[in-house]
Amino acid sequence: MFRYKKSIPVSYEWQGYIYFTSLLYWELPKRTQEKILNLCIAAGKENYQALFEFVTTDAGAQAVCLRHHLSPSTLERAVRRYYEAFPRKI
Image (cartoon, rainbow, N blue to C red; front, side, top):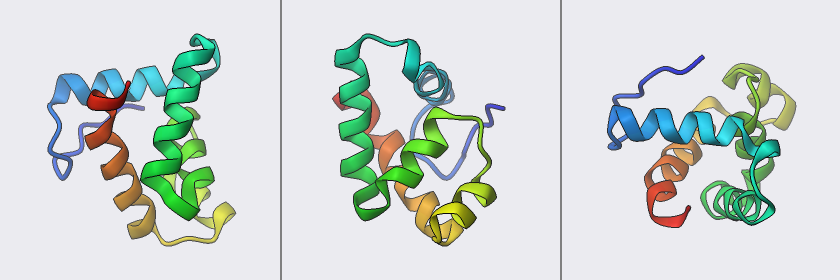
């Protein structure tokens, strides 16, 4: 479910676009998929797989953190970097 994150300095409209585009990952052209994956790698660093799962599925943050053994604040920082970079990279 989309929720506007006030802590991310990206407009409501862009956050909605990023959220829904990311969820459509498997239906996007290969080139766009590559850009999203590369953005997850850049924003998530060693935790890119957790970030990728979080932004491309409807899995909740708590479940992703447990599965990937990372703190919620680490995932939150990666998500912030992803949302901030998305408009420039995709």
